[in-house]
Image (cartoon, rainbow, N blue to C red; front, side, top):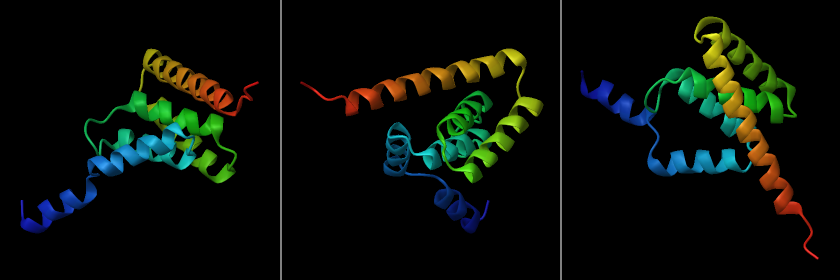
Length: 117
């Protein structure tokens, strides 16, 4: 591997601050962060490739996005993963993860905006 290849690898990896920022944005409901996490797990760019977690993040985008363009991209990614990379039981697992994440997010969001008497 040449020096330029090594430098390119280093430039494509996220540092811990960037990773933490992305997770924080996802926790706050950023569909762009959700979509980017789906891409990261689909491609394995920050570690192991994990199609179940990629599916989870794309399903979250589909559920929470109000923007049709990112929703369409997430649907395309979801369909590709479901059709070519996962068994039905793993699709179910990814769907369960997404449902739990969405339920927790919505609950926390409601609590945040609840008026305290």
